[in-house]
Image: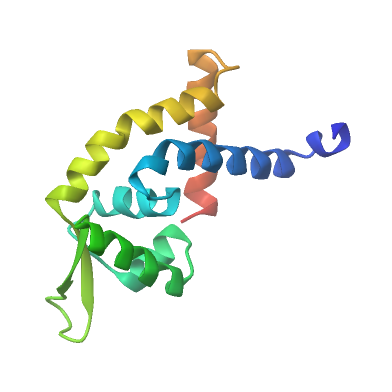
Length: 141
């Protein structure tokens, strides 16, 4: 594994996988996964979004978005509403139950991150976060 660990891209990939595993473990009781949580978290920053916008912004396949929104709608965490700009389109909005779920799971997210970043001190964690944000701003926009 030493040779692979010399590759930064591979390390980011593996750490991303581990982060997802930890987060999914914390979310397990709710029956949701990290993809659901990410969608809810995005909706919390908007007044609603078209499904195609969710696909683009989150980097998920459009067909996956349909299933995720269906799951969240069944739980009462999200709802589809007519778009004010186009009657044929529907926007997805976060419900009050969805907001409550996010508040309740904030601690789980912090625990997952804390577990993953356990080897780093507070200053190193902050530096890592800033560096990852900088990469995300150019690569994930």
